Each structure stands twice: as C-alpha cells, then as structure tokens.
Length: 320
Image (spheres, rainbow, N blue to C red):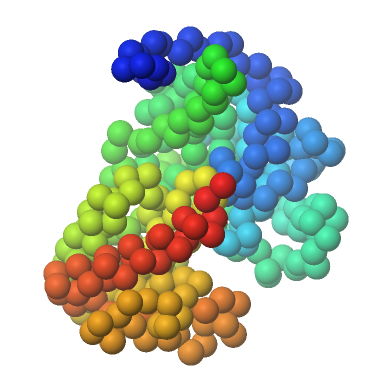
C-alpha cells in the first residue's frame, strides 16, 4: 500500500527504497528491539552471534532477545530467501532451544548479568520472529494456525529514513498446528511451547466472553493500536512503542477483573468508590495495582472511564 506525506493539503507519495537485511536492518532492529518488539537485546550483530549444535546441525541465532515481562526467550531471524519454510525453520530453531535450555540460560546470564536457572524461564512463552522485505503467499498461509509461536514481520524502508515493521496477520486461526501435523519436531515443541488466545481465557463462558468483547471494542475506540496479548491466565493491553502492560483483564466468577497497573485508588477520580487496591501487588508483581470487578455493561463504561485516566498518565510518563 502506498505511503503518502501531507504538505499544504497535498499528498505526495513517499518512495520505497531497497532494504539491506545483511547488516544494516539487523543492527537497526537490535538497537531498537524494545521499541519494535518490546523485548531486550541479548546477543547478535552488536556483540557476538550465539550458536548451538543440535542433531549434528549448527544453529546460528541472528538475534537472541529476552521478554522481561514474560521471562521468555525470543529468537529473531532475518530472511531474504523467499523459498524457506517458516514452519520447518521456526520449529527447528525452537526445538534446538528446548533441547539446549542450559546453553540459552547461560547466554542470558552472561550477556544480561543475571543469575537465572532453567526454572526461572517461561519456556512455554517462547517464540520466533522472522523479518523479511517480503513474504510469499505460501509463507503467509503457513501461519494460519491458532497456536503457532511463529511471527512474520515485513520491513520496509522509505525516503527520509522512514521504516515500517508490518506484522503479517493470519487469515484465519481456527486449527491447531499440533493436531494437524504428525511431524515429530512440531509435536515435541507444541507440547512445551503454548500460544494462548482470548478464547482460551474467556471462551468457556459465553457471558465473560461477551463482556470482554464489549470492553475490548471500547478500549480500541480510545486507541486502535492497542495490542491484546493473551497469557496463561489473563489478557494484557499493551501500547506498541513501549510494550508495557497498561491493564490486565482476568476472568472472575461471572464477570471480569480489571487490574490497573502502576496505580493506587488515590490516583483515580472514582465517584462510585469502586476501585480496590490489590494488597499483594507489590509482593507478587513489584508494582502497585488497583482493580475493579466488571459484571455488566454499566460496569464496562465505568471501567473505561477509569482506564482513560490511567492511560493519560501512562502517555505522560512513557511517551517520548
């Protein structure tokens, strides 16, 4: 899709330039990993490439990253070859990681000056990201599964040093890769690496799912760029660019529990006195956290009213 620049009420098309994936884009990505993907750089072109040997094959990791929020490992690979299989290569890298956990933990500890053990890492949340100037229709169709820990981003360079990292979204995500494929590597990885969906969190209860859909719709009307990230037990609402959770949405009895992160009840205009402090938040999450129970559409409106206050403070604190 063409990109235009507005000047004096006139639009002029910004020309796309050739992307150099060999070094320039990898270096730029590694320098801005937190902005682009919300993860921390571990190793790659900026220091030394990390490699492991698995089944007599050397796996050289272009960029190794760490998701501090999830305590999970992220592998990023940069591709120019349009013929590679995202499924085969993605699961091969994830399998190599799962079979050499100690090597990956050692790399994390050395590069990040940490003291992790294998038990400290959430291997279930591991994922691999492929970055390429262009993916084929075959590669795009290959990610049409609901539980695939493989993500595709097309990178584009335009005039005036404008860059775009465009996530390729699956056309449909109804089938499970683990149930359709008999490949031993895929089966083995799928037992350890999980991709959770909103249906996993709320889908077993029609009432909770309906409340969640309405809440999500209202939040997206505030900012359509919000990302709703499903984890094992909740859905986090994040803002691309800094990738911090703003709120967490949990299932709760016959409704939802909204957790307003980095906040206390005194931080809100709360005329109904509905906001409750999560007393164990500092102990368990190392941050203040307030909450609200949602059981009706009226509750959703009030939850959004509180969210807008939190979001304004969030933007003031983290924008720029």
